[in-house]
Amino acid sequence: MFLVRVVLAIIVAVVGVIVSLVYSSKGRVEYPEQFLQKVISESGVNISDSVFIVTGSTSGLGQSLASELYRLGGTVVVASRNVGKCEATIKEIKAQYPDSTGHLDSFKLDLGNLDTVNPFSEWFKAKYGKLNFLINNAGMHYGSGVGDKMYNVKLSIANPQGLDEVFVTNYLGHF
Image 1 (tube, rainbow, N blue to C red):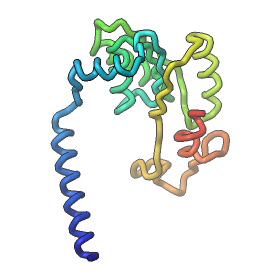
Image 2 (tube, rainbow, N blue to C red; image 1 turned 45 degrees about the vertical axis):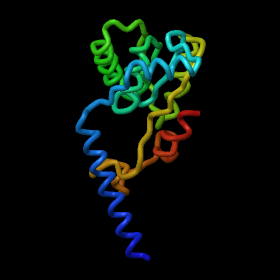
Image 3 (cartoon, rainbow, N blue to C red; image 1 turned 90 degrees about the horizontal axis):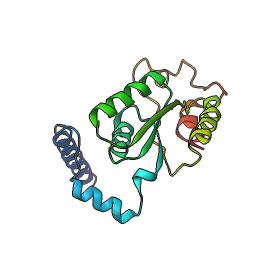
């Protein structure tokens, strides 16, 4: 029985790797426009009247989501700890969708440092007054890579407030 489980686990892992390689080789996933419009219209959400905050939106899934929301006419705040990356991301998204009626904005938000959360919140409330969607995409994990402080246990992983940086980034900062 144990051997059967091991063989099944190996088969599932191999199939998973093959599927991920096939899909990752195709580049960016494009959703059929009609499908996307159907989902949006059935949801009752008016994207062009909505304000979104997307944390961790300077790369990966967060950037893709910020791009799509902007393309569809939404107001998107690119929130990240690196202001330079925020500006570069906004430039890239605007170049990708020059005809969008959406709006892009950014402000520094380092969820691993709680001292940046209140200034971000105050700026946002003063500028927008309402938030329709908060997309909690930012996150980090232990073992991010060799030389990374999350991997090297000899280095401190405490944030400026003395709390575990991973816990603060993934949970407390969003609250």
